[in-house]
Structures are given as structure tokens and as C-alpha cells.
Length: 103
Image 1 (tube, one colour):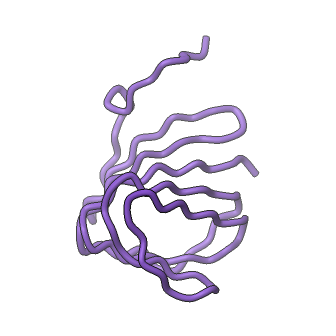
Image 2 (cartoon, helix red, strand yellow):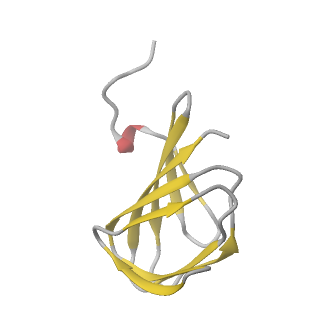
């Protein structure tokens, strides 16, 4: 049975070598991922086979897409259609929540 009330802290956490920590809630047609990115981290140019929305909960940095470079902060929302490339630099510790739609 699917739980209807979840807590991020109850989800297992994976931590990459660069300190980026992720917790995932999987769904049938989408998943949510809570990501904590350390200050000074860069995400190189990449794309995904799926559509993605990213909400910035806290922190700041610069997003780069085919549309150019733009600063972001808490309250910003990114939308990446499938295969749209993007890159980011994180000036401060940043908390993101991604919604990844199934392909």
C-alpha cells in the first residue's frame, strides 16, 4: 500500500563524493528528489531523457541553459523539457526539490 504522508528524513539518503546528498520518493509516473548541494559545487552541462521541474527551497547560484546564464535563489523554479541541457553553479548551500516525470 502506498503511504500518503511521508517525511524526507524517513527516506534513505545517498551522498556523492562531492557532498551532494539526495533523498528520493518514487511514484508511478514521477519521482521527487530532495537534494542538498554544498556551497561552491558546480553541476556540469547535462540533460535528461525526461522532463524535469526543480524548485529552489533555499540557497543561491547561477543557472546556465541555451537561453543564457541567470541567477537563482529561494523561490525560483526551473523547468527543463526532455533533453534540454543545463548547468549550474551553487554559491551557497542550496536545497532543491526535483520532480522528474517518467519517460
